[in-house]
Image (tube, rainbow, N blue to C red; front, top):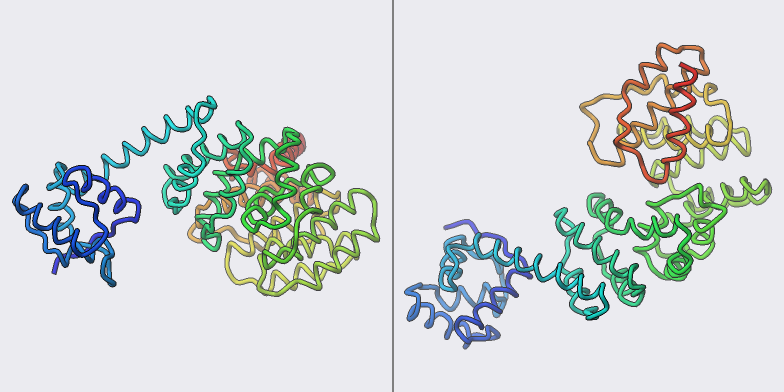
Length: 400
C-alpha cells in the first residue's frame, strides 16, 4: 500500500478553492465528492474514487492523508504537474499576496485584520519563513499602532511547551522589546496592560526578554503589572526579579521579603535558571553559600548545570561579589558532544567562558583566563546581556 503524504489544513483549503475555480464544484459533502470524481474522469481521464475524496476532504471520519499517487493525480487534474508543483505555486502566491497586503496596510489603504489573523492562526512556527512572516505582521501592528489586532494575535494558543517554538516566537516578537528599550510609551503601556491577563505575553515578553537594565524603568513596570496565576513558575520568577529591583533600590528588607516569597513557591523541578537566581540571592542577601552546591548536586544533564552556573555567577559578578569563592567553575567541564547547539545554549556558553576568565583572573591565573577567552564566539550574544558582555570583555582584555 503506498505511503500516505501529510497535507496541511491550509493546503486543503487551496485545493478546495482551485477545484471550485477549475470544475465549478464546491467540495462540502459526499455528493460534491461524487461529482468531482466523475468530472476528473470525464475531463482529465483521472480516476480517483469518491470514497478517497471523501476521506481526503474530511467528509467522513478517519485519516485525511492521501497517497502521493492520489495527490499527484488530483493536482494534474487541476493543471499542475504534480503535488509538489501545486505546493510551490501556493507558497509563491501566498508570499506575493502577503507582501502586497502588508504594504497596503502600512500605507493605510487597507485594514485586513481578519485576513492577517487567519494567516497567523495557521502558523505552526516550524519554518523560518513563518517566523519572519510573523515578525513582519508584528512590526506592522507596531508601526500603525494596531493594538487591537496585536491583542488578538496574543490570544492564539501557540505551543509554548516546545522550546523550538518558544525561541522562534522570541524572534517574531523582538520589535516589541526593541521599542520598549527605546522608551516607546505607547508600547510599554500596552504590554503592561496585556501582562495582567495574557499567558503568551508573560512567557515571551517577560520571561525571555529579561532586560535587567530596565528593572528601574519599563521592565520593572511590567513586573508589577504581571499576574502570577497564568504561568506555573511566575510567582518564583516575578519575586526573584522584584528582589533584584528592591536590592538595586537599597531596600534590603524588601529584597529579603521577595526572596522568601519566591522560595515559598519554588518547586524542585523548576528551571535551573531560577535555581541559579535563588542561589545567588541566598548568598548576596543571607550569606548562604550552601544553596548553590545543593542545587548543583541535584542536576544531572549538561544544559541544566550550565544554566545554573551562568545565572549564579553572573548575578554575583553584577552585584560585585567575589566569584572566586566558589570553585564549581573549575569542576564544570564543557563536553562538545553534549552541547545541543540551540541559541540559548550558545550564548550561555559565551557567558560561562567570560565568567571563567573573570574567575581565573581573580585567582591570578592569566593563562587559564586567556584559554577561556579563546573559546568565546561573540556572534552569539543574548540581546538583554549586550551591555554586560561588552563590559566583561573590556575588563578581561585589560587584565590579560
